[in-house]
Length: 354
Image 1 (tube, helix red, strand yellow):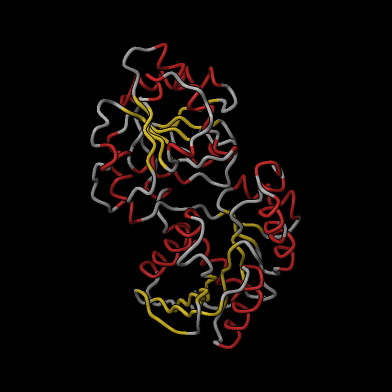
Image 2 (image 1 turned 120 degrees about the vertical axis):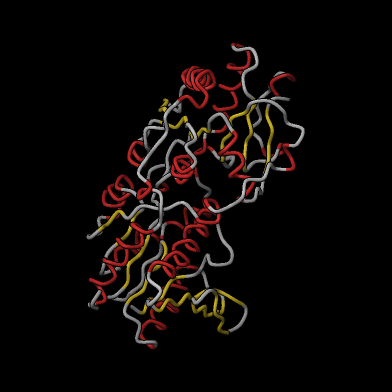
């Protein structure tokens, strides 16, 4: 197949979006080496380059919606490619699928800035013009898209754990060299949806209730960015904030932490749950629909709005540590089934033989 990819986040962009895009394309190349993959990505000037057998074409920058409407459409037609795969913003092409990360902003507007809402508002509008279908990462997100966007032909394809993490050699983060004793951790950003303040409050209660309760490592937030919560000095010293970890350092946390937490109030998928599954790390996660869908038996669920319940579950996990049996089907953690589902849809709309 000859496929054109929207590479708007190929070099820069939100970490989660860029990670999904880059891993999807690189894994595609390994699984289907005979497919011809072209990535259109924003750059200062026109040019061509080859990255690991993937053709990359740089074009002048445009806002993402216009980028897809203009560049992806035009190149697919001129290059006689079979089809295209774009992110978030649909195209006018009859042979294109749009992968929508999530439409949480349509339900929880107070979690986003006015500028973000303006930008996101084009997602449902452009999704409706796509004539060949929408991809979502989870069934629960597919149902939400259907409720709000009213578009036809939505397919949930899943997501996989990035190979750079699964193949990394575990290295203890330099920032944790002096951080001794047992610990648990969370990978998070400091915004209302990620629910970090309730985790910190529950950690404080657990520290007061249990002697030698594990320390907490918060990945993705600096001390200056932490929520404004007045903590006892003893409790404050039990929390370490780290940012910009390498995959090797993150793997070390998964392999050495007693457990991990993911207390987000809403998500389109929840890749940290899949990552913890891969490393057999026990988890405490919000009891929300999408986490129930993508998780294995390694997850203990909790009401993310109840600090008291979070505290009780933290203590439970700390006492049990890694006694919890953790397993899930390997097939559910890799990119191969994800790419296979997407490729089947592209074969259908491109009207090419598999």
